Length: 217
Image (cartoon, rainbow, N blue to C red; front, side):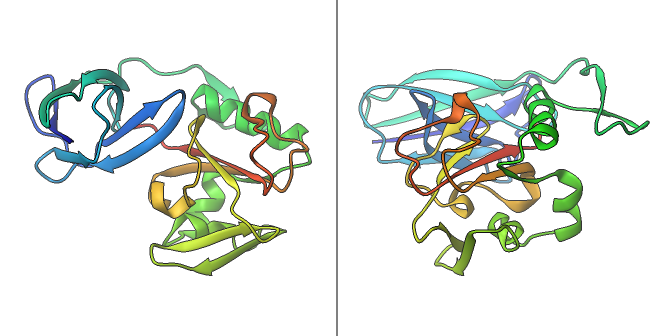
C-alpha cells in the first residue's frame, strides 16, 4: 500500500519542499519532501488510519487523517498561510530582539540554565554551514561522527542516540536520515539521561538524546 498526493496553497499552486510525515503516538514513522511539482509518495504504509503532518515555510502546520485501507491512495492537501507573528523576546540580554517559536524560546532558556547539555544555535549553524546536519556535531564532546551511506553515522558512547525532531521521537533513525542541515534551527545534545528535559526523557535512550528544532515551514 502507498499514499501519494499533492501539497498546494489555498489558490491551488503546488508547493515544493513541503515536509510530509506520518506521525504515530507522537513519533515520526516516515518522512518525505514534496518535489518541484508538489507531489509526494510514501510506500509500505499499514492499512489503517494514519495521521499526516505537513509543514512548509510560510504556511501553518497541517494535520490530516487518512484512511490507508485502499491499496493506493492519492490525496490533495492545501495549506493555510501563516498569519501574524510571535511577540519579541530578548535572548541572553541582547538589545536586539528576536522573534522565535515557543520551542526555540525553551531552547535558549535551557542553553542559559541547563549546563548538562550542549547547545548549537542558528548562528552557530550558519557559521558551520554543515553539508549534513551531523557535521555540526563533530566538535561536540562525547559525540563520534563517521561516514555512512546517507550522510554520517552519529554515536555517543559507541551506540546511536535517540533523535527527537520538533518534539517527536524518531526511534532507530540517524539524524541525517530525517533532517537537512539547511532546515535546522537549533540542536541540543545530552550524553546521558542527566539534564534531558522531562518531556523528552525516554528510558530507551541509553546512548544519549539529541533534540533537533527545525526552522518554521
